[in-house]
Image (cartoon, rainbow, N blue to C red; front, side):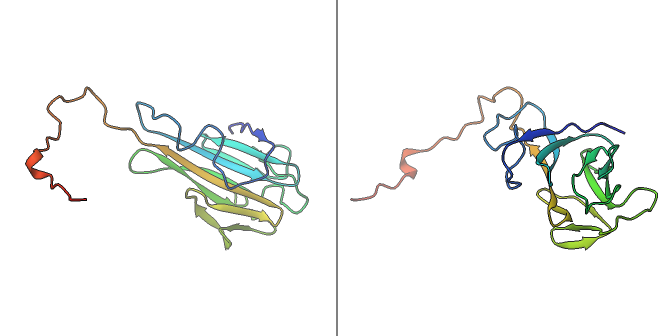
Length: 166
């Protein structure tokens, strides 16, 4: 299983995107996606960049994403990467482990208890009232690539513009 590395932040807010991704970020030459899980638990706030196939989430020390709370199961949930038709991917969160062992308290996605859920941008996952995570799927769109077309211009005829009287 991939090893998730968390980057720590002093802020306890889950309402902002991960560091390094913002609307002001410059546009790269190719489309890119970034998948992040931002966890807030009894210990602190941690940012987990996602890219691997499967992540175990829970209280057990050998979980890929470890949650710090006595009210979270040892193997509380699992993230599984799934492929989209367009070549991009997304993550599905499943209650418990992949062998069918469910967590004690389940998972709530955006306030609804579910056994599994295909995560969408800014979905909130609640493992217990004090342990939450927010999922971010950040996509950077590319602009028009290639050389500038010198004939791709808009010409305005001065006769087309109405003059207003002030």
